[in-house]
Image 1 (tube, helix red, strand yellow):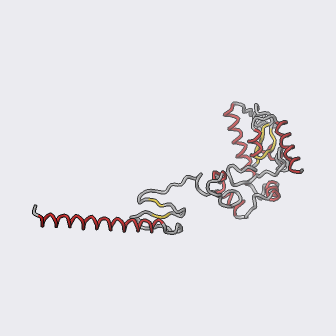
Image 2 (cartoon, helix red, strand yellow):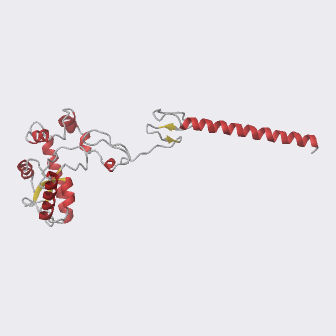
Length: 242
């Protein structure tokens, strides 16, 4: 190869390199501009991915999968839960999507956090038939628990009339914290939902062995002696008064 050919070859290489560099710089600028685009945009260029409502970018052909635990799930107060908080894991119950719930609760715009409204629903099962179904479903859950633990006793196990009368006797109040429980609730782990607390944990959910308690107190007591837990709650209540 002569000197002229070599010079032309080198020149062509430099031009090609410079062209590639310019193209790459242009692509980088476009990428930066794309990333800085407002997160409220929807869709986007299918060749470059799309911007989701949460501001994350997904590649073409890849689905943006967000688990139910990470998503903002509305709780019983209807407000979105802050991302990253311990409350984010709360999930709404499946029953809230049923026709019965929509008819009895949603369409009537019932304030589930109002104890008086909850009591009105409880004492008017003709107008609110969903009350009986919710209590019966929870009783069935306790039956399954007792059977799994081998402590189910059919003759002594609680019935709907017994539980319904017990809730009324307690005025829907938790035996421990004395706060109103919720018969109707939207969150799966609603801390104030009503539960049947067993007095003797070695026995099942039998008549005479249960009392009304909110989920929060039920879980906190667990296997602690009843008298000890009651004393603890009483001391806490006295402290609040002081």
